[in-house]
Length: 278
Image 1 (cartoon, rainbow, N blue to C red):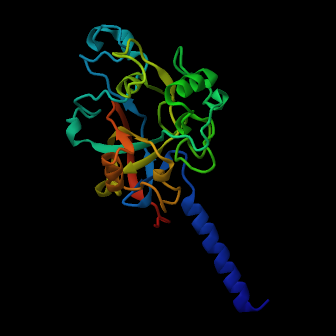
Image 2 (tube, rainbow, N blue to C red):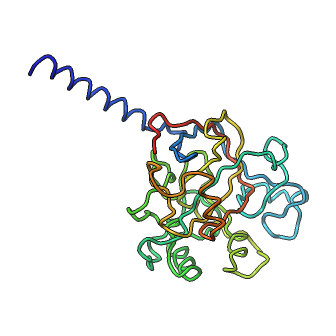
Image 3 (cartoon, rainbow, N blue to C red):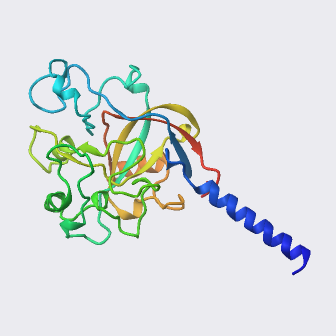
């Protein structure tokens, strides 16, 4: 082997190692998308699901201000929006984290046993495992990829946590969410809700506004976005699918996606990934 060949081989190996290292995430990081690029989120403290004095997140007819039991279990509830974020600031000025849920089935899954198992330390009476599968199949006609223990290999998601690929996990997130208001809003169950319907945190990916791609640590409002068609689902490398808020808005206008607010907030920084490309 000549000196030039050895040098080229060594250089290639070093570049490969550096590239691989750049793609690895720390335990407190996840990937996201923004401006059609791959970005990295770094979480610096736990989530917050904001409850305000005049809310009744557990639907027991008692306002939170007079119901201390409501404070004992974090209730992360899509649809419900407080007027303030965890800093006390007006929610109208809070950054948005669009959380994409794959509300389609790649293979028209009819097997309830494919649903996420009950999380360790989950909520009392949580809907999970085969019971969750049966409920979702009866409501939607299939088991959405969002609540499958393992998503179909035709798509990828940024959560569960790549460092701990257990269904329903994502660093510094809650392991359960309340689906009651969402099911009522979709017309899947009659309303108003009478109790929370806790389910495991769904498989999901993330998108932020173009202006937030590089952002210092702040609180973000989680805004769930139901993605209804596989063709819109973002590829892991941001090469296809919805990977910007503009494309998301277009999909919503066309009826291919549904966006809602929530009382769920996360605290992290956002940075363009070193290996981002489109």
